Amino acid sequence: MTPPVPRWALASAIAAPVAMIGGWTLAAAQQPSFDAVEETISALAASTATDPWIMTAGLAVTGVAHMVTSAGLRPVPRSARALHALGGAATLAVAALPVDRYPTAHGVAAGIGFGALALWPALAGRRGATGILRPAVAVGASAALVGLLGVFVVELQGGGAATGLAERAVAGAQAVWPLVVVVALGREAAGRQPSRSARTSNAESHPS
Image 1 (cartoon, one colour):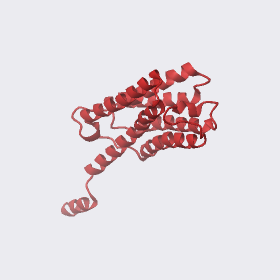
Image 2 (tube, helix red, strand yellow):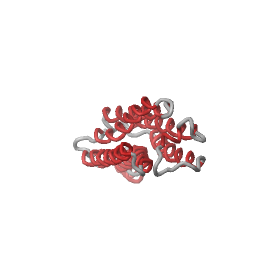
Image 3 (cartoon, helix red, strand yellow):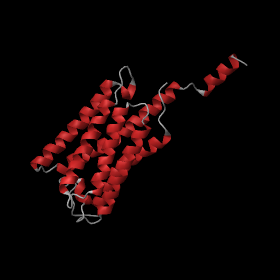
Image 4 (tube, one colour):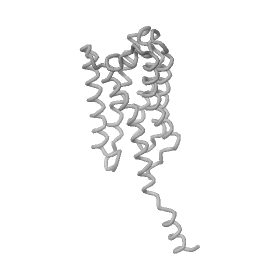
C-alpha cells in the first residue's frame, strides 16, 4: 500500500512558494530602485540592499520548507527525496552566504540548489505508477524546470536584460512543483479510500 503524505508536508509545501515569491515581492517593494526584470533575487538579499533580511528570510524559509516537504513525500523514491532535500539545503546556504560578501560560495550554493530542484522530479517517477508519479509526467516536469534554468543561465552569462525575470520564473516554478506533487498525491490517496456511505453499506451487509 502506498504510504500517505502527512498534513505537515502540505503545510511546508505551501510555505515554500509563499516564502520565495512573497519574499522577493516584499523586498522589492522596500527598494524602489530595484529592477525586478533585470536584477537577481540575490541582489535583494545582499548586504547593500535596503532590507536584506526580508529576502534572506524568504530564502531560508524556502530552503527549510523544501527539506521538510522532502521528508513527507513518502510515496516518492528516496533518491528523489534526497535530491529535493539537497536543493533545500543549498537554498538555505544561499540565504546564509550573501552574494556581495561570499560571491564564489554563493554561486556554488545557488548552482547546486537550482540543479537539484530542477532534477529531483525526474527521479520521482515510478515504473507502473499513475498520476503525478507517472514517469512521463515526472520527466516532463524536470524537462520544463531544466529548460527554465537554461534560459536563466543564458541570461546570466550573457548579461541579458531579463536575467531577473528568468530567475524568478525558474525559482518560482521550483518552489511550486513540490506543492503540486503533494496535492496530487493527496487527491490520489483520497480517491482510493472508500466513501463513508460505502463503508456503512459494507458494514450493514456483513454484520458481525
